[in-house]
Image (cartoon, rainbow, N blue to C red; front, top):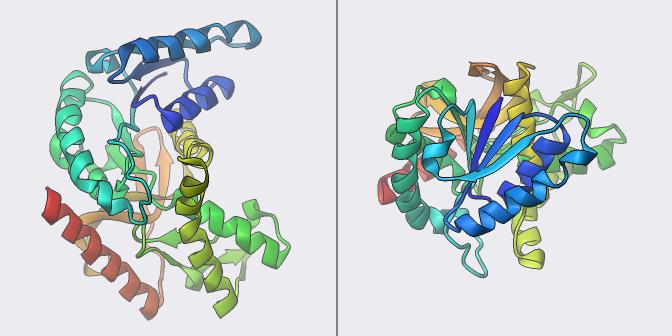
Length: 301
């Protein structure tokens, strides 16, 4: 099971280290502009192999070396502007970067599945399908997965229920237009009541990524673990349900964008897109998110 990570920065290397420790992949390839640094990272990880029961091969390489990968994870990004408050500010620079990298990925690894982590993840996931020609089931973005986990963590404290036992999703855009799907939130078969206090937790969760970035200069642990969670479900064919950014094909009349909906992730990639029974307010929030993402796609595509 070969996984290639393009962009071995803070997120990419935290992901690589997680894959190694959890034995999710047997071979990892690190692809970055700074080849010497990537080689150093690979060497450092290889020196840790004696502590592992099952060794994992780690190499530095170029885009051509992703050939044969089961999954390619895109973490590469232009530098994040200081004081950023909106991920869409990075769209223009990262679109140019994706246009440079993704066609080459598709050429050397035409059967791979592609996980987009780079922001703004929703427009870039759409662009990735166009640049690679890969079918929608093999292209996905991390979307609102981390947002949903942050929301569950906050909700857990309010409800005194473990976050793993909460089925509560943040859907829509990974950005300002995300929303909590409270109409379908439940635990143990019991609906979680929709209250103003609980919706306020979504607003709190929405700003946590920017808060972390402002305080430490990047976000890496939560997003890397989220990406590892997606990869594990694919590589181990676990068929877990999680919210990811995927092509929206007519749900609530929305087309031509990627947004987050609950999906089943397995060996083939996106094996099923779930269409939750949202209330009218949530349906409108989903459509508004689609408009915003479509505007970004058209502005920079």
